[in-house]
Length: 293
Image (cartoon, rainbow, N blue to C red; front, top):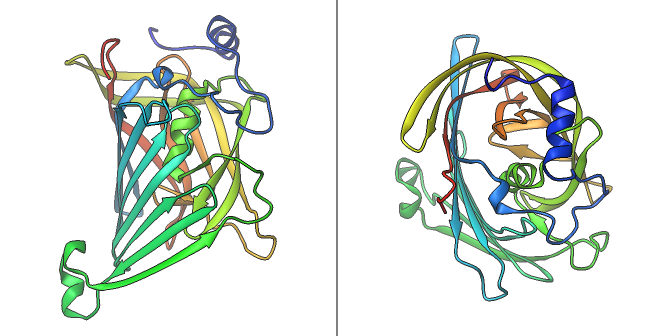
């Protein structure tokens, strides 16, 4: 069936394209934005009668003053009683974050803006100042707090720090496709830096059922796929702090099932408060055209 692959074919794809990363750390310039095949992703999940959705969009930006191509990642995660909005501005060559904006509405109302510098990050927290402001959008919140945090001493000099969604970008731009392939990135999670390793741990059969938009032509994909199974495991650089890693509202050791032919994620799995283990499956994808930005 078109688009279907076997574990052996996965290895062929690896040899025919680029060598996957086996180094422990993500080396500078290892990522190629042109390897990112998707432009928009939509995932959905349903458990115990409760539904959740995740929408992710990537957009290319002109090169920075340093000459590095830029990308912007926007995501919206709608979980029971909570909605997460995330905006990340990254350098395309190493997923280094320039600014991360996290907004949560529902059980908690706040907007966290992280502006990253060479020495640390500026943290701006915006919250409702009263019960009346809780019903307003973030633009109506008035309680503001600003702090500056120096990076932990355990962080290597010059290390690129990305955001949680930046890890998905890194996986897309690096080409991890064969068991044993891995990359390690430093991720800013809430107000601490964590070392996250994304490793291919095997091949798993998964049924696909999603809409694929390729240059305006929309096709329904229904097939069985030999997907690459990646697992993201995180550890805080502060030995006294537990990991708080979360991506798109999913916590813990997050798994990503990856289509090595289309080069897109087809399923995300992690823990959600009160729901436990949740699988979020791809329902639609918009692919980038060869001439697209």
